[in-house]
Length: 87
Image (cartoon, rainbow, N blue to C red; front, side):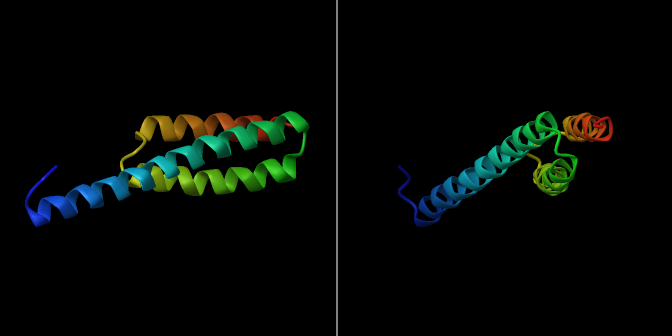
């Protein structure tokens, strides 16, 4: 445990940011699962709606440096292709 006041504050700030980053990464993973579920159910309209929310969140995670660019592009492409091939 740090003794200096600024170090104590830094520990709190880092813990808060870590929690926020973890929540964002979990939200992205959950949206991928939700989109896959809608695709499996054959609900294209709902899958498209979830996909738009997924895009927004994964781009935010990329901007924060939580996910690499290639993974972002790969995940978007996979889901978009699955949605477009639904009939």
